[in-house]
Structure formats: structure tokens, C-alpha cells
Image (tube, rainbow, N blue to C red; front, side, top):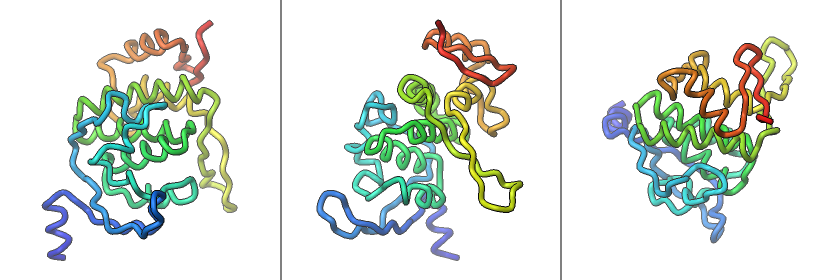
Length: 206
């Protein structure tokens, strides 16, 4: 209990990540995962496809970790904070650029803004959400149908989740990124998209 208290007091949690370093195959050692709310960006577009500067960020605890589509969800479940989630998702996005990785990078930034009021996280979340639309418009994530006994998943379009996150994220327990939802619609329009908030559907502006 004393050790746990010290870790909390120092705002760091130690997590064991087992795997091989993709550079030399050595076993990874214990790494510190951040639990603070300050986000200092290493690059202007860190966490926003196609930027990969997160891999060179000395503050990124996952930079040399062996992360893939098989173990990322286990690592995500062990993340102690929104900031560590950001580094995890931004790292796998840089290595495996797919829509789901970009969306969860954006969501982790949104969470970081929600819990710690980081303005950097707030503005970076908007850019990361936009990248989901610009580069991965037809991508999906998978939700579990928990009301069905057998394990069943169904696809959900990321673009509609992005628009909801921008327009009214209250159901996601996230703070709004805009002072007025109309400003979110204005940004979406400027980016080339239309969001029907009544149906929850996003389309490309003609």
C-alpha cells in the first residue's frame, strides 16, 4: 500500500510491457506511463496522420515498444491516464495508419482536455478528428452487442462518431470542444462535410 501511495503521489504508474523492441529484438524493460494532464507537443501535427513525429518524442513511453493490432487493446486496458492513451494510439497510428487508430488518438486527446483542461489537447483533438474524416472517411470501429449472450460485434462508422464528438459529446462524458455547437458545424462545413445532427449522419459537402 505504501508503494502504491508513493506512485500516486508522484503521478506515475509503472506498467510492465512484455515484447521485443522492433529495432533490435531486445526484451522491453519497465516503463513509466504518465498520469499528468500537461501535453507538450513534440511536433505541430503529432498524433495527426500522416505525421509520425510521436515516434521521435522522448516523452513517448511507447516509442520503442512492440505495439501491433493484436496487443494494442490489452495495452489500452492498462493505460492509467488519457495522456498515456494518447501516446499509445498515436504510436500505433504512426506505425499502422488506419482509421480506428486515428479516431482513438483524437478521442484520447479529447479525454485529456476533459480531465485536465489542456488547450494543446483541445486543439490537437480537433485536428485529429478532422484527419479521421479526411483520410479514413469510410472506416469503422467495432462495438460489442452486450445484450446478446454470444460475443457479437457490429460495425460503426467513425465519421458519425467524429461529428458527434465535435457537435455534442455530452453522451460520451466529454467536454465540448466548442463554445457553441454551431461552431462545430461551421468547422465541419469548412473542412468539406455536412453533419445532420438529427439523424447523426455525416456526408461530404458537394
